Image: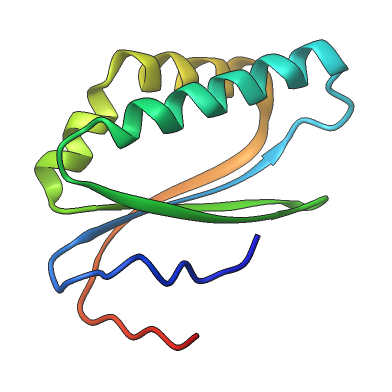
Length: 114
């Protein structure tokens, strides 16, 4: 994937949810397939929430950095409370993630150079 996404234009006050995670080593193919299906489903659900601006991610064997962009705190809260997102978080804790960190940040300024 190429970062950054030139279609994303963020404004001061927009929100960035940064999710850094490492999957549990040795997950079998069936578990990984369920993880990927949930990943696809949650991205689709996030896109349907008013105030969703987009996302970017970078991933390698060591882990993933996923950034979702939101118009405001209300949109972030709506996403945090979404039932599918709640289920994904439950499964992440129980099955998929060896370690993770989540941060919600506020955009002060935004520059893009492609």
